[in-house]
Amino acid sequence: MRQNKTVASTIFDVFNHIFLGIWAIITVLPFLYVLAASFAPDSEIKTRTFFIIPHNPTLLTYKFIFASNYFLRSMLNSVIITVGGTLVNLFFTFTMAYALSKKHFIGRSIVLNGVIFTMLFGGGMIPTYLLVKSLGLLNSYWALWLPGAISPFNFFVVKNFFQEMPQDLEDAARIDGCTEAQVLWKIILPLSKPIIATFALFYGVGHWNSWFGALLYINDAEKWPVQLILRQIVMLSTTLASDLTQFDPNFQPPQESLKMAIIVVATLPIMLLYPWLQKYFIKGMFIGSLKE
Amino acid sequence: MKNNIINGPKKKGENDLMTATTSIWKRLKKDKWLYILALPGILYFIIFRYIPMFGIVVAFQDFNPFLGFWKSPWVGFEHFKTLFTDPDFPMLFRNTLLISFYNILFYFPVPIILALLINEVRNQVYKRIVQTCVYVPHFVSMVVIASITYVLLSSETGVINNILYSLTGKKIEFLTDPRWFRPLIIIQSIWKEAGWGTIIFLAALSNVDPTLYEAAIVDGATRWQQTWHITIPSIMSTVIILFILRLGHLLDTGFEQIFLMKNPINRSVAEVFDTYVYQVGVTQGAYSYSTAVGLFKSVVGLILIQVSNYLSKKFTETSLF
Image (cartoon, rainbow over all chains, first blue to last red; front, top):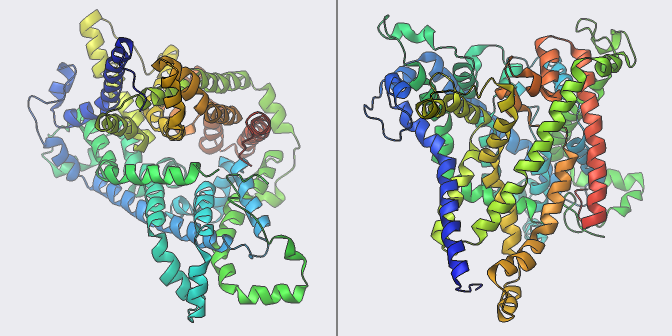
């Protein structure tokens, strides 16, 4: 290994380790502060400067948001949008990628070039909006699922994956009398599990984190995902006031720690998935980018 | 022929498309499952990707939702004239280019430097911990990133202003002061994506032949010399292609980030083409005009991508298509 033990080299190592450590800490510190502040009463957030451990931890904010119908509905909406959207993405991407991975597909290069062109040029926000509107999809989750059903980049990655699968396996199965559907179901799909998982995560995280589609297409606030509620509460300073009746009518929800708690809850699913995410995403990134 | 990212390895068997129609019919029948499987995807691209492209005609009309595409009156390049003479146009152009330019200047080098430093860490556990931490913000939604920025920087309760106040007795209006907008956007980008951006460089670094270093050590090269003469040259092609591709997206400033950080007070520095399209199109209903703005941006973008792809092909022999 490359290692010369000179004084300069050692000094560099020490500083490098310290610098990277500080960088890593600064990166995650804002998240830790928000997490800590979500358990603190408003008075503490306003008077103390920075803290990671609250003096007077309380679950009041979480009790409040989890008693709020409006908030719980937005969580449910997010789950529906994420699960439904991911299934739509996987269905459209994998069926088309499998078909186009076959070199004897008639018109293959026309279709592939057609897909490439969409990576370079698009109609833009307004024509897409008008299309969704004229299809009658406004206020329906299909408006969030269909317009982005296939990411062209993901499509090409999956297509290349299928293309590199050994053809012999399929041929052998056919000789043994498998129908086309059986080949797909019994040979191809089981072999594709890791890449399906990768892209389910890719697409799923995208859906969980998205909010602009809902802002654009979903007027009915009861159908909004949690990310949009978060924007309402933190950036536009609206409250969950309609839910106050659940509590004592004199109850004032803690404004600041409420913001913190909603940030935490909107991030939580990703953080719970993170250990898997990291593994799969890096693998996915390598599948996608390192093929030269 | 050189392989490229889009088409993947090897193409063959595409030149026998010229067979008789009867055999095409036979092949279609034999492989009917393939075409059935491809159908939803192809329909998707036609409906949701190509029809909006034709929807661009709206930019040349005075589109009226009640009359539709077919009956709305044609106005030619009227909306483009309005755009170019719009007093907001220089502002939009300047804001878009400046944010992009500052991103290239201040954000672009960060993942490279970070990757070089991470690469020098020999302790695998420490390396893993650092990487795990710096990747985190990439997975979080832009709303969460912007929300955290708000709660940290707000002038009444934000923790950073609290610290500033206790130190200096003054507060800074980070979120509304136009002078803070661009630095804030760049810092946010670095926070969210710089760590993740190291992955591609770390991958390039892991491909460097270790015997090069061994030879250099035998020749008595110091660590700095090894970095300068072996490590940096070996990632240079990755750096150049990413840089050129970045130039192709000069007019893309990241809609969500700008949209979330924009407010009426910092509008003079924050409004960019993308947010303007939303503003006049969706909230004010000026469909034709905003489509013209979007089309202007797309066309310039397409030209920039072609030019940078050409440059990339010429100088690095790598290209996207």
